[in-house]
Length: 409
Image (tube, rainbow, N blue to C red; front, side):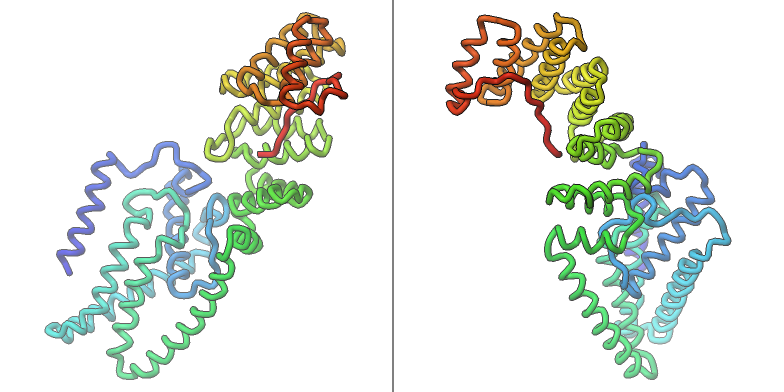
């Protein structure tokens, strides 16, 4: 047993040595806000609370959620915070469990059966300690999946002790009743995990302070074209994060406002979005600048719109949608008198880039034909024939305007 503990502690120490310390550079405040906190006392108290939450999940997992990020577990900033009663109870319970296990082992040192509770305690310690944020911070606040192995150790210890109590029948009966109740909770949770939609809706109704849970609910509504509900959920996420660190809720809320025609509101939201943190796993950065440019155009700020379209293209030089909408902004800006006339020529050049990148895109060819016709360019006839090759239905409807490309992401 001592050898197992020694090996486990040695591996943890080796990890600390290998990583040259216990900090994570540029810790994501959404994943683990405690590790990102600068006040050492607040970190200490908050990690104690996290231990208490894990202890509660081990003993009575009545509240389960797939995410506890950001402000789902508010930091503990004072010793007067009554939530600290939870880790105190957890530590005392663990100390009692450990003491009882060691006493049993001491009384019957030559009986392997009496070593079972201590084995359970060892499994619990070795599996929980690395994720406890004691030796080093981990990349999550609370993660129920991390309790799979610790829960096995906890059950081994509890059942092992119950078998050797004088009133072991009563203890076993209590454990059986608890097992039946937990089985019912498990059955309920299985239904909630039956589909991505089910778990998204179920946990969003319970975990009101998690930005990720509420964001996922908002994107669920957005994918189902329930725009009012989506916008309301994005507003909830933005209220949870008043510092605007994450651009995604701002970006999607801005898109909804563009769709609604509330261009001034869209401009304000997307202006905040381009200053936030971008996650390439969720959206490409150029998409945010592009839609900000689109909102600026409809807000009658053509020069600023063009700057942001150009910014999107500087990020991604093969962004065909950016070339299309930049071309429309330049061409329409010149035709409407909002930009110098030479902008029409520049618009045609941008649309030519768009059709080169996506030669079978009917929208791009329609826009190119429209600007070429407005400019009286002879290339308009060639472009028109190419458009009819792609879509003969345009023969009776020659393009007379530029069409913007916009889509929810």
